[in-house]
Amino acid sequence: MSAPLVTILDDEAEIRQMLSDALQEAGFRTQSFARAREFEAALKRITPDVCLVDLSLPDTDGLALVHRLALERGATVIIISGRAQVQDRVTGLELGADDYITKPFDPTEVVARIRARLRNGRAPGQTGETACFNGWTAHFNRYVLEDDTGEETPFSHAEGEVLRLFLQSPKRLISRAYMQETLGGAAGESFDRAMDVRISRLRTKLREDPKNPRLIKTIYGAGYIFLGDVSWE
Image (tube, rainbow, N blue to C red; front, top):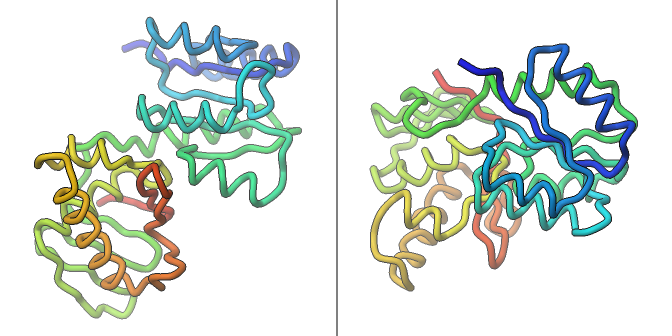
């Protein structure tokens, strides 16, 4: 089995070299790019396990690229950026990044973050029947949500399908098109309405504030993102 492939997209040669050296020493394969167009061209022939992406790119908007990677390719994306504002971090995560590392950084931290993301691989069908997140436990074998006091709330199979989809891809944008493709059903207004109902019911059962939900966020015009920290048993 070949070593995981990490791509590095950053216009600073020193950073690309520093990351490549650290990752190769840790046993990863790497490919580096200075321009987004070179990186996106390479994606036609390679499938990286993790993409490191700088936001300040000379030939494209880094956030838009992160969004495309997460939405169209389902890629694992870690942002590396000099933008340290909280809003930048929130925006990056909401657009689909799996992690956000601010410059300057220690390359050993980047290696550790990558290893953590790979350990927490989220391929559908490889998860168990129990998921823990933010004080909740979802028991898919019994179709119940359990809070941290032990109180249980049942959920339907249809609601469970949506919840499992979110829990298998935390902190990653899930588009309506992907939901339709994954969950089945005819695309259109009726499917969208059904999803709205299921998500509304899940928010209620998770005791979310409908005006400001903490876990299931709507990204208008794009889809949804689940912002909880998830572990499977």
